[in-house]
Image (tube, rainbow, N blue to C red):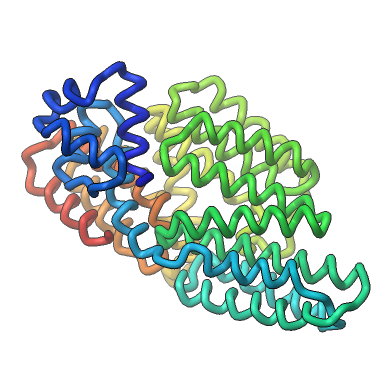
Length: 389
């Protein structure tokens, strides 16, 4: 089922509305709505906005409609999975394990800035190399090390696929990564696979499922920084469910775990949580809780910490969400022009995670539509939003 259709059905059912009742609210035919819910038809932008407003979805339905369009490009969702099956089914030979691990680590460090499709292709190439090495049998230690390398590569590929809107492929790859981690005895890989599941659920509006994935990840791994990321995902989901005390408790738990961990040698590895990223989590939670002062302060700190003295972005995706946060804060303060400028600037980035970006951009879109529905600047932001499909 398409993301929009599934989310629409869930929200409609939660509010006790029939298709006919919803149709009257949004001025669309019941039969058309039924086909949209079942995934037989893609929603129009007008329908997405009307349904989002009628069901008070806070931009989630608007974001889902955009992401469904990108997901249509995912024509071969099992490509990565097939490679991973080859690895699991093969025998093993001696290889340069240290060089392989160093390469995998470096690829994970390139996640934040490198072109997503290009990096995915290179990671695929290395998965093929691991499969080649695994064709000859060697010892159990080498076998586990190679499976561990493949597990990290699979996690990286799954994240990149989801960034590109390839939902089916990302979930298949995530599941395979979890299996590889379990087979290799690499609990950290299993923990990150649950974190990815929480991220997927968060950006798809399935907030209770985020909490379930967090609990699974906490049970799988108790000694790595993935626990911090799991706490952050829980905080974001609880904020979106209106559970502010639960959000604060999750943030406090994550902060406590982070303070106990050593500072990583390389903070740019996507699967390492660096201390500076905590401002990013707190920013998101503060924005959702309506704490505009702290949301703006954290966003400014994220931008300052993520930009080099010459203006180069260290973390393009974090900076985009920080600018969207500043845009939301500006919109709430009555600064329409500033809000739209921040919003358009946030969308104009070469490296983006489409689901995460659309989730926050959807929040801004709703704020602008609610406060300034007939302004040219609001339409300008919508045009920019359409352009990134």
